[in-house]
Amino acid sequence: MSESDLYDIAVIGAGTGGLVAAFIADSLGAKTALIERERIGGECLWTGCVPSKTLIKSARVYATMKRAEEFGVHVESTRLVWPAVRMRIAAVRDEIKDLERAELQKSKIKIITGTARFEDAHTLLITAKAREQRIQAKKFILATGTKTRLPEIEGLEETEFITHENIYDLPNLPRTLLILGGGPIGCEFAQAFARFGTKVTLVQQGDRLLPKEDAEISAACQKILEQEGVQVYLKAETRRVRQDETGKQLEFATEGGTVQTVKASHFLVAVGKESDTTSLNLQAVRVAADKQGVLVDDHLRTTAPHVWACGDVTGQYLFTHVAEYQGKIAAQNALLPLKTKANYRVVPWTTFTDPEIAHLGLTQAEAEQEHSPCKIYRVPFSALDRAIIEGETEGFLKVITSSSGRILGAHIIGPAAGELIHSFVPAVRDGTLIQEMAETIYVYPTLSEIGHRAGNQYYQELLKTKLVQQLLPLVRR
Image (cartoon, rainbow, N blue to C red; front, side, top):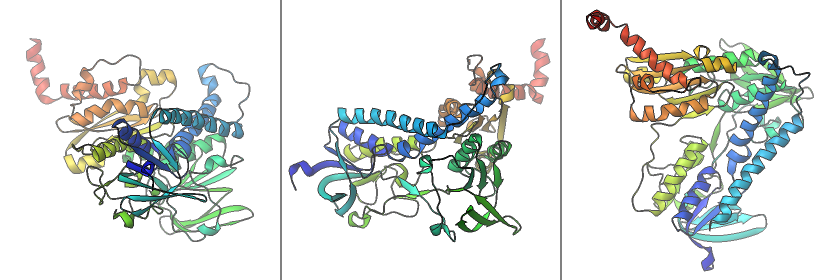
């Protein structure tokens, strides 16, 4: 092995977490290798966030054009061209890919293509087609992401199905689409394809969609999907799936034992993801992992003292923005003497349905369990001038506070929810009182004012208290 194959640190996986970790390591002056078995950019760029949100944008534009006359605009005819949608997805991916490649070219990072496997604690065997290469590194960062989790359903192996990884490759728009799974992926695709004109059925094992969201938000999301033509089944216990010349058929039992069969031309499995470590041979480096992912401590160090992990492979928060956060911490902790702890107390996320759904902090159920009593401040977008102007009045903001008014969580279903939630991040992080939302000046007319309206509710509530009502006559005199 030549000296050129010896590195200070090797990062396995070039998705968001791996890329960020490699950039940080390179900036700190470490000789860095970045190993990727498929394509630079990982799931987010090729099969996750970027293509799915591009698809959702096309669906939203199509839906908006159908409403054009509400805004005084006459459109003679509206037609969806599925191949053009696919072409735009490819173009967006390529543009972002080029940006990432340009950044890599400015660095000294050594990019190695192939599948990495530990031979011993400091040696990787990298295989690419008929070529093999061995490298050694003092330290490693695992960033291999996740793969689609497949449920144990009778007949699944014999049935053609699609996942979020290959749904963009469909040559034709599905006539009918059966989706198994009511999480973010299932809900986003259900709405997008329903807007394209596909007849969509969504089957969820749990008792509600988006089970990690506030229950009121989940119910609102289901109502919106059903209004747009999506058939939703909850508490569905899947029995078997099969296919014949007429398409795919899923048999499941609903609450009470009633057996249902749903048929569709296409079957999308979206029940979740699992960490992807099968090719790494973690035993050789004594890194422990369970069903959730690679085990890490608060510093993102694995059970091997010279190996760290970041991103989805840790199984903690499967979001690109968390992978970026972890990538920075993993690289810094691997190379610097002062260690930083990962802190997940305030992690926002968004489901990109239309309207969007944004989550931050405790839900109402969690707050009632941990901080009882708590208070709820709820503002509908229909009461917001800018939402009325935009013709986007569906949804609401729900702010949850302690009895003293300290903000514990904020949950939004409404236009631009993914943007609006960030104004609450410092509030939840710092324990801000909701009255500060009322005391802050917001631009009019904007959607951001909805936070101000929630703060105003606090003051209205305060002015109605018995003590204040008794004091007001004295103050006026």
